[in-house]
Length: 300
Image (tube, rainbow, N blue to C red; front, side, top):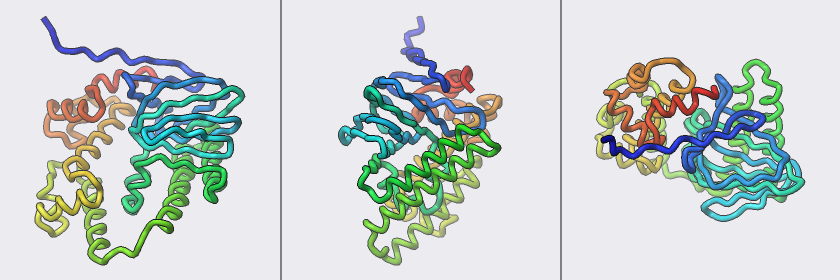
């Protein structure tokens, strides 16, 4: 008798602009083909229970108020304000009567992997609430509304155009954050940052190969013990975890947007065996690669 626990079926809800897919409290955001940006407009009073997803979520009220409870407290986001919810952060969403909002969701890997983004890692991992009094709010809302307009027009290269506006948003927010919080870096810290950035680039170019800590440490010119400690101090995660995240992200993209076999995707993402791929992917995404593809297959 098969006594293995079975995963509950994903809950699927249709909205005018697509599907919302839930597996427990984890949401799998669906995107139009060849895109990783989604905009949801709503002017209906509705409550969305606590959930999380790999996408960044940006709440842009257009009228009235949107309430959201995150781990660090509750936010009452008014028209004219902005709330940025970081990836994998549990939150609910409560739209009041006579309210309207745009909700932007996007996969952040292409922005967060920019080589100077580690400077604002702390900011990227926490909610950002821009009130009406913030000098940044007007500029950020303008960029977000331009991204929404770009999304709705669907002109050629619209996905990249949306990301261009989102990148400008992070530049504005990041510059403000650094101007208020940064002190001059010690020379040795700047050197460590440059080494880690170089190592990240090495991973981006070689993740599909059989590389490990020893390879990237040798590339950086340091012992693996020193490099490992320095890498974790800079990024907050171990090198092996960073490499796993990179490979899972590559596999995730191919599962959604290609018809490659699971075996071929495992090889292309740098996994040594299909068993390792299945285990690592399930640990990261709470489902197997095959299940992940099945969840998305009806909606892409």
